[in-house]
Structures are given as C-alpha cells and as structure tokens.
Length: 358
Image 1: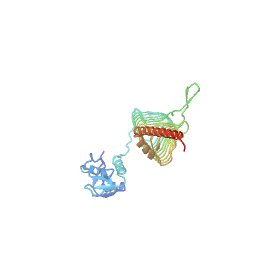
Image 2: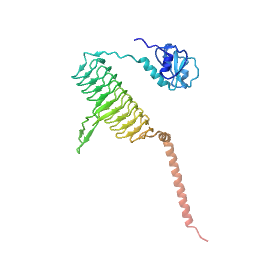
Image 3: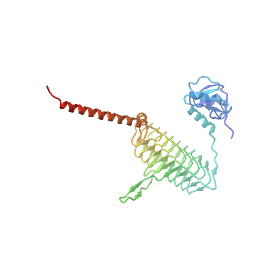
Image 4: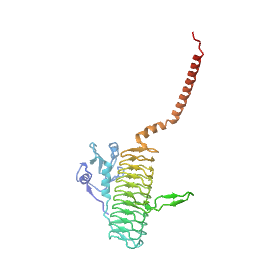
C-alpha cells in the first residue's frame, strides 16, 4: 500500500503545534532520530535530547514548545511524546479490508456476523455470538456461546473469550489473553476439602480498551468483572473476579489485582504491583513498581513499597534502610555507653550513701 504523504503544516494542525519551516514540506512517516530518513519526521521527548538531531537524516522534528531555532524544520508542541504518537498512528492507519470468513473457521448456530468482518483460520465461534462491523479475529481465536464483540475490535491469535462476556468497540486484545475464565473462589469444609464456588458472572470490557498478551481477566462470582472505557493493560496481568478498573487506568506488566477490589479513574500501577482483595484505590492513585497494596488508598496518592506507604515516606525509609547495619552498630555502642554511665552513676550514689556527716 502506498505511503501517506502529508505536509508539515497539516501535521502541525493535527497536534495543535507551532510549525517552523516550509509549510509545504512533505513527509511520509515517523521514525526515531537514528532511523529517520529524508522523507520522515522524527521527535525528541525533551530539550536535553536535542543533540540526537544533529546527525539525524530526518526531514523535520517534533520538539518541546520552548525549543529555540535549530537547523531542522520543527513542530513545537507541549508534549512531544503525545504528538509523536498521534502522528505515528495517523501514518500507520489503514482502511479496514474485510477478508470474510475463512473456510477453516468453525461458526456455531444463530451467530450474528455482518458482512464487514475478517475471521481467520481455526477461529471457533460458539452459538449466538454477536460480532460488530469491521471486527478482526486472527487465527485460533475462540469465542464461547453468547459472546458479544463491538465494532472495530481486534482479537489477535489464540485469544479466548468465555461464555456471555461482552467486549466493547475499538478494543484490542493481544495474543493468548483469556477473558472470562473462572474466578479463584473456594469454600473449605471442616475436613479441609476445598469446594468450588461457581463463578456465574461475566467480564465486561468497555470501549477503547487495550489488553496485552497472556493477560487473564476472571469472570465474576456474581455480576461482572468490569474494565471501564479507555483502560490499557500490559502483558501478563492477572485481574481477579469482581474487580472494577476505572476509566483511563494504566496497568503495567505482571501486576495483579485480587478479587473485588475497585480502582478509580486514571489509576496507574507499575510493573509487578500486587493489590490485595477487597480494597479501594481512589482516582489518580499511582503505585510504584513491585509495591504491595494491602489497604484502601485515598485519591491522588503516590504509593511505594510493601506494604505500600506514601512515596515520600518510603523514600525516607529507604534512605535509612541502606544504613541499617551502620545504625545498628551505632546503637549498640550507645547502649554500652549508657550502661557504663548508669553503672558509674549507681556507684556514685552508693558512695554518697556511706559518707560521714559533720
């Protein structure tokens, strides 16, 4: 397919930038400074990285708003990383081409499938599956009975969506993810035998969500596990039953949220963060990587450590932690001095008690 060719002025308008250079300069893609060519635009995230442009072959660059004049034509913006993402997506966007249903796919009874779909080989659809327009199902995708998939959603190879789960519009689910497997719920009798609690709820994934490879989102015991609009989940994440994740939240790889916990809007979890069951994280909470959250967190807090505590407090504690051996030695020396002073004081008091009076 022929590359898109777009003027610098048009790209600047697209990202509300300030164009400095020939308005009619044409570029056909975006690349990093090292791999950019004379027909592509590049970017730097901050002013301290401008030296990367010196040897770049790029035709133009996206730079921070306060950047002074440089040799290259530029688009000045408040957030170069955001602007680069918008422009990159523009260049990579391609119109949907409906490939139809591969003859090697298995389609159950009473499915509702529009004309504009792409269903690859070895895809399995159960009964009464509903697909929106321009849905793409890559090889090996399995949709159980009564699953619904919204318009323009893409499910990559070997994704599994279990019965009755609902996926919104413009959702992307990467390879190997499992949506709607049973939640981890058991009741233990007096003899120690674990009795499975039936998991009869669903998973609901709202519009504009992206789910990384091999991530698992468990169905609810009752009701629904709910991933709200605009959330982005990295690879290898575990979401327990009845969890709710608020709009626009970001969860990094290997993080996990245990059952019935609720995350507010715009929550960020760093890599390998663990969130205990039945806790609530307020809007815009940020949790640093490898932290363990064991209780409720008020909105806007930044947390670190295990158990997670406010980040500033954690920084102070971490500074002391590295000095623990030294501090322990100092404490022992102080204890010896205190003991010696106490002994001398006691001897002095005893000596005064035996003194002669005039």
